[in-house]
Image (cartoon, rainbow, N blue to C red):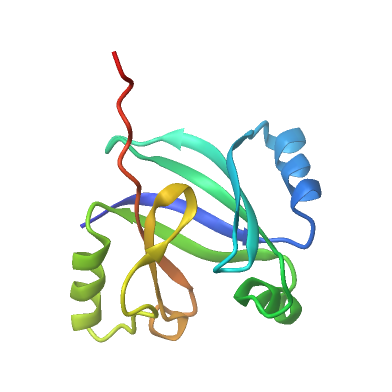
Length: 146
């Protein structure tokens, strides 16, 4: 069962400049940043709020690190802007299978590693009214040691 909007992915040409815009304009701070070599992006997660299911909602800013990445190709075609929407789920495997059974194409045979150790898959935008849709199961939260 989908529980929240996990994040909205925004493709950008210059990650640092885009982060500064969101910091200066809205006061959003970087919660996490990383380079995802597999997907060819450098990203920053800006936390918007916590959610009732123990997760959070973020803006994910994505800058391509190589010209052959999906985000680089998308930017070349569309320019900067909203790239995808991601819904949080406790069971990305089960929800992806259930959605696939309804005729929606799932882009990865098996979920892959996403931001902050999450597990992700994508749904084909042509089956989702033009919206690239991501399903995300967050990595388990480590409890502090006592």
